[in-house]
Length: 363
Image (tube, rainbow, N blue to C red; front, side):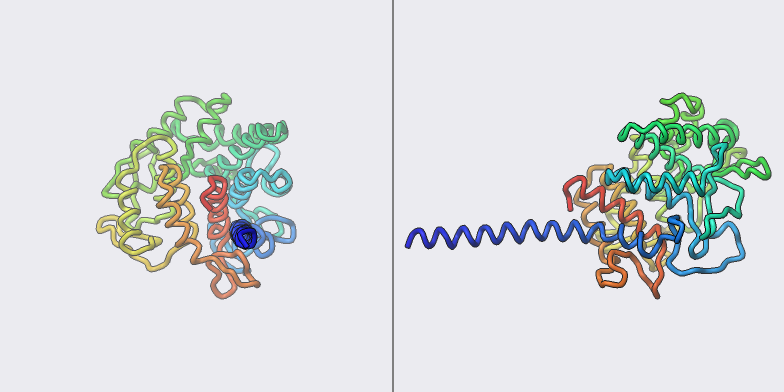
């Protein structure tokens, strides 16, 4: 009889453990269903990443429509493949970079048509830095000199042409031989810039100037400036504060060791009061001026929270971000599907946040 009770206990415990491991595995599979969603719904026939599911029209070439593909999306996808440790996925991205985005001299087109053609003549500093950093890391991880060679090629172009008065600036228009007079603070990625200095590709003085712009930016109430004008030597603010920009500035300041206390308190307070954060806020009153939320905002805030070591906040933000995730069959894993459409950034950045939390053993 005693043996019978022990047998029943073992069966119950075994079943519980099996359920636990199956639950964890199901959560893991569900978490990365977003990767499959992007490959199914946000990938063009040529393998480039589309910005939206649906096609669209716009008369302004500086805006993005429908199935157009961005170097920003490519860089984020490469970052995800690297974080995942997926060599095949990274190689596929590398092939798309070389075939469609990269020119022989190191210029990277910031936007392509669905067919992979460029109708613009500018690069984007932030995208080039992200791509180069991913390539440098991949070269070290997988011991592939091709990645380093390409990263050097892109970096040399950037440090030669995207320069204005000893600062790297937002973009370079090759047809006009014109570099932007503005550096957006959310473009200043400390790790990427440090890589360039360490490899002798960027002058130390330019690196110091960039980091000074980022770390010495005045904090008006809880928010940071949007950009810095090189000639005017002035920081510039938006009246309505875009929280994606702010989250990235705070993230990069945290990575560089600069204080983000005011912004951190704002996010904590806002989330505690409303259980959400909104897309835009008034610069002066700090009240929300829109009612929309964005999975991309939550994702950047998760990465920022992890950089600060606040796992509890990261998980709270993750829980709210997950509310925007679709679990029905048609768009399984997709975020913020509205009338059959979504933006790739509301999917690829949450995917990065998910993978980061999973790598830390938090989900």
